[in-house]
Image (cartoon, rainbow, N blue to C red; front, side, top):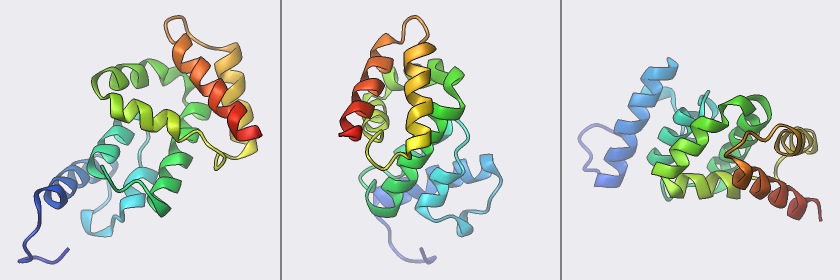
Length: 142
């Protein structure tokens, strides 16, 4: 985006939110492509900020980065499921998009870890999320 160019509210909101996330993860705003904002997320909260910034733009490379990050967080940060549940309750669109990201693009290795987490380590109170994950993974196996 060039200085002096008129931007719409949606573009401006993305820039403001991306700048906040970029500051948090330690990169400069000028260096960040939309998919990079997602790649640098280290928590569900970070991913939600990126999701809000990229609202309506989750396609192509950005969608691939989102799917990869969701799978990574489910596989490697399973203990943060409470954080995801809390964010999903205040932002249902984010919650739906997270669960929709568990698709055929998730690697088999990650899918197996996610399935094991959801089957063997589902925390009380999160049975709905675990069931949805298992169902999504079953659909992608066919």
